[in-house]
Image (cartoon, rainbow, N blue to C red):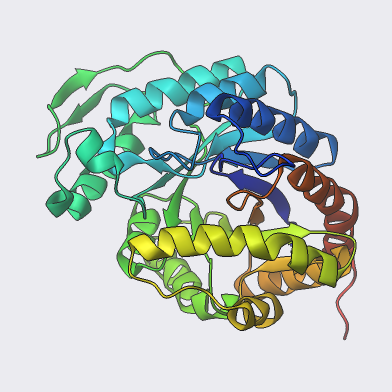
Amino acid sequence: MSLQFGLHTFGDVTANPDGTLRSHAQVLRDVVVEAETAEAVGFDFFGVGEHHRDDFAISAPEVVLAAIASRTSRIRLGSSVTVLSSDDPVRVYQRFATLDGLSHGRAEVILGRGSFTESFPLFGYDLNAYHVLFEEKLALFAKLRQEGAVTWQGKTRAPLVDQRVFPLADSAPIPTWVGVGGSPESVGRAARHGLPLMLAIIGGPPARFRPYVELYRRLCGELGQDVPPIGVHSPGYVAETDAQAREEFWSAYKAMHDRIGGERGWPPITRAAFEHECDAGSQYVGSPETVARKVAATAQALGLSRFDLKYSAGRLSHDKMVRSITLFGEAVIPRVTTTFSSPSEP
């Protein structure tokens, strides 16, 4: 089994050495540098998330990705995720087809319902229609990516009758993943549309998602289709030693977790809970040896085609993230690749 490697960021607003916050504009420029670094050290994919709040700088992923496309030549570029429920599928497809042309066929999309909901009131969508919005819009997007004349009717937007959508992608169909955070219904949607599955595993043992993988494979089999790729998105950070990685990552991660968790009624995270996640959960934080061992174990347990590291964490500084990206590319990827290319023991 071969394994690809990706990076995800939400454009978290980071801190300067003196503790002041970097501007949204500077964070956007930093993300471009981080993507250039990712390509230089061997990553296959770079994804940027969509948010509409002051602690994240990226609200227009395709614009950021177009800037990255002009500075890179090989790495694939996509969203992580595009909140399709509060957007228009036709405009989303047009934007990614434009990115695909600018990047010589390197565009991908990861579509999701969104665990943050600020985009719904911002763009005038009713949260009570959360499920039907994604169901209908995903079905329409699946039709659009075939780039033929589309006839479609639903409750969430105007109907289309023999409508072509332009520009055409450089390399259609654009690879399109469905991001799943733990919903069997979303697994079923991905299978029905024959789309790859991206599991967002941000807490607990990764093996607990094995039933979703088995459900996905079973549904694909029942539909008489090959099983598309399966990927995982999880947070992490790499430094020279386990102790250094945990110490540098902890304070930024705790501040981010407690800020967002406070909005959702979660208790503050403890250091013991964080250490447990690093040891046995879904935090890939440590030395290259530790992170490589954990990535390989997850990939083998779930039968992955791609592992994507969410490398940003609140105010974690740009220079530390660049160093982490470099260590992952130069020291983690080769170790995991060796594990997967070694002959199996009898």
